Amino acid sequence: MVTPASGKMAKGCIQPDGTFVLGTESDSDGAQVGTHPVVVLPPSAEEGQPLSAVARSLPRRYSVAQTSEVTLEVKPNAANEIAIELSSK
Image (cartoon, rainbow, N blue to C red):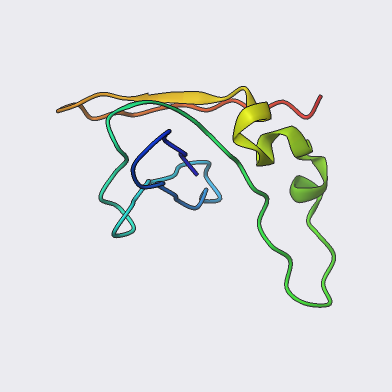
């Protein structure tokens, strides 16, 4: 999730190959222009199923905009291909 100081949040699901597309009103209409904090949440487990190893290894700091230390810059009129690197430390 991309959480701008004002305006609409954009969100997208990380695919098995690591790619993602952000959207606000639809699944792929993009994010608001500017530099914004990023929140990364692990996939939810199905009821009665254990969390995946990926979900268990993702530090909690990534689940809060103020502590994630991850930002992305969305530029106007650009392709905006962004790589986000996370650490399990």
